[in-house]
Length: 118
Image (cartoon, rainbow, N blue to C red; front, side, top):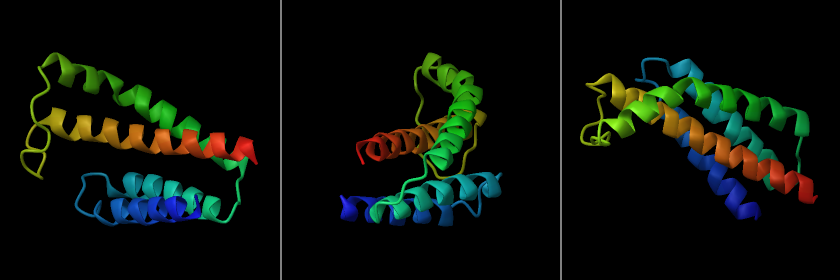
């Protein structure tokens, strides 16, 4: 498990690193680095349930806020959000944001579940 935690740590640090050209890079860098830190500490068996709860709450609220845009994207017939790197349409950026937060939420839920097993 330690290797998986370290791989996730590196991945989320890389996710944060590529946010410099995002319209709101500070939010995304903070979120991705937060998840990277949680995974990094988990690699050494260090869990803080209060920190996990804060992360889960932030991700849940953020996911609820962006859910409408994700549902709109689905109702549009799921047009490509990866055909180009620059988000030329609002649904591209908002759908990517939803999926990014969903990824963070899934990892944090998994970390919380792991913390309960210790």
